[in-house]
Image 1 (cartoon, rainbow over the protein chains, first blue to last red):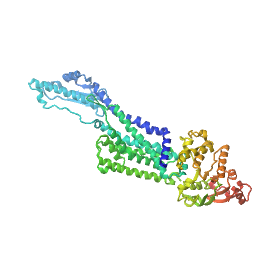
Image 2: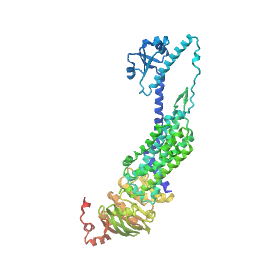
Image 3: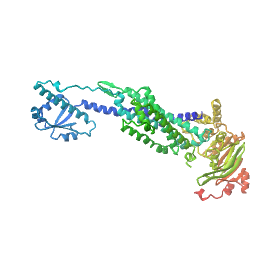
Image 4: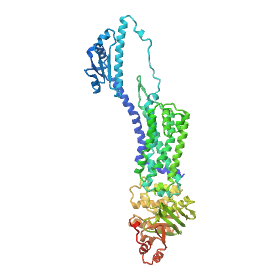
Length: 394
Length: 245
């Protein structure tokens, strides 16, 4: 009863605070889709333009291989830039790819001797690979046409040198296709919202009470300190959960609206089942409780809102460090005992839930151990509120 | 009835309260008088159970401070030395929140809120957020909050501090009225005029100890002087280096 009274008042108070509204509602709804989808879209857009664009090709020794050059020009995929120094042209980004054709190339081809050339590319360019690949494909196709001519001149069916044909079929689900990227972003953001969503409320109900001098009047009411802590904790957990649920929901909407790309002309859309979404929120519940209690235990030490912010912001590193660990090892599958590591275990389970490959035992171990840590954090918060030294800094 | 029995509170090496005993009867205003830092506020914070005594105890209507803190808090209405309001809540929401924390509910709570808003003439401000209120308005809300459960015992730490003449007068009227209704009030003050006019009995506190007690008249006689101010100077003496600094 008392707990509900306190929860209700804190919710009323926090919902009238713009800072909470940002952290709880606008942040998750606006920022999540942007952070998750925008980089994906940008990379894709760049790939697409590179696919469509003609490749600027710097060539040295074009006169050595008129046949090849004619073939390249006929393809319509390249713009030739004749230069003595193609390496410099690539470095200065005048050309995307460089080609050096050795003297006597054409003659060697006609005389059926091995002919030499060099492809120059700037491998430090992240997206250069696409254009180099296109030039290599063109060169290979030219090579193939030369071989076919030679075989034809000897009366041999070109099919003889192509004993089988290969067709690659993509069997990965959209989840897995985008998993490498989203599989590392999504868990981090979910856990981050679990932390940030309730942060302002946690500060407001602890250090905020001290700053406004409302703590002492509150302590003179018959409400026990444990009830005060639990009522306030319930409010912090509520705001965190709302932030978390909204961030998951806004992402589902974004996935449904924005295709992640297309495979053979068909739009690729991520489908996250409602059950999966529910499990994502459920799996994050213990860390929500733990973070909320930890934030309160830390913030009650502070005498002012600003001081509390200084204490609580470093908590974000507690999330970011394991999150980066999970990010750089997308295939990381820890042994069952590894699921007792707080935060890290939740990140791994969230990732696997999203990719649809979660292990029930791992989920169980993660939930049980995380609840234990959450309980310890709640005990710590209760202890803090029982101490004169903490409440009054005497 | 509030009985204080040998209360002691140490903050590290500082003996803020150093063995204080007194009692306050129903229908009486007891004043704790003393210079800044004498231990008045600490005594009141011990009585309101916000701080735990190093030694000694007290009883409020027979409820022991240490063994039944919740019962003590339920019996008391408290205005601490430092108090504030929730800026985003209205005056009425403050009264409702504290009323509920004191276990009031439903029509009983709403009726009590009406009584308190009428007592302090908060009426027209009742549904406005407290942030922009004047100091006097805020003090009315804070006092109303302390009285919401109609307590029979009140601890008021400097109840007129920082108020203009009219507001202070209003607060003194409420205090007198509560006394006439049979409440037991303990208030701290360093304003001698207020102590003289408002208090039935005084406990003069200095360095955490009681140095004189009785009616204002008895305190004056004890010091053998005409006015309370002279008695105060005689009993408390010249400020020590610590107090002056």
